[in-house]
Amino acid sequence: MIFYGEPFAAFIRTFEAVEELPYLGDVAELEYLQRLSLHAADIPFLDPDNLPYEAQELLAAKLDFHPSVQFLDSEYPIFDIWYANQGHLDHEIRDQAQHIVLVRHDAQVTLILVSEHCMRFLKMLDQGLSLQSAINRQSAISANTLMEWVK
Image (cartoon, rainbow, N blue to C red; front, side):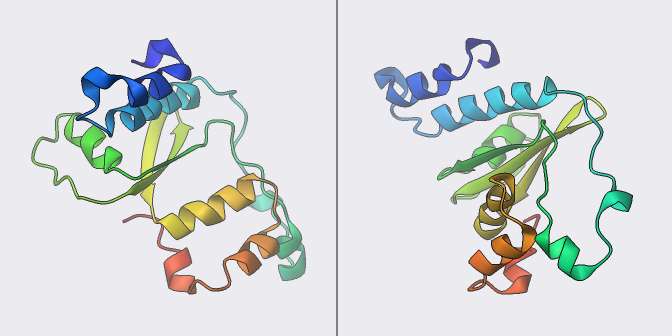
């Protein structure tokens, strides 16, 4: 599926022959994002030594994600479906929406399951908001919920 490109997921979502598998378009998109992540530019990752040490400077900082970072929100348990199809047949497929961050490190794409709130926060950073601005927009959410990275 990954060789059909970006429009393939949209095609699958409207293809009547697979309408009883409504998650299939999101799985196709996940496969496509894995390919984008794998073939993204090879640039160095963020060096923590280059981050500002002063709290105010850090809060004002805007972070640039590595080009391999991709985001996918799905109303279906596509991470669970994908994982079960990687040979983990006993993996529980939960009946819930799932949010996935993809990143490549050492030629290996890793899928990270995150909470909806975490995904929203990461997307704000990716859109160029400063750390402080993203935190302010998430102010109604507790710190524990915000930092719930892996389910």
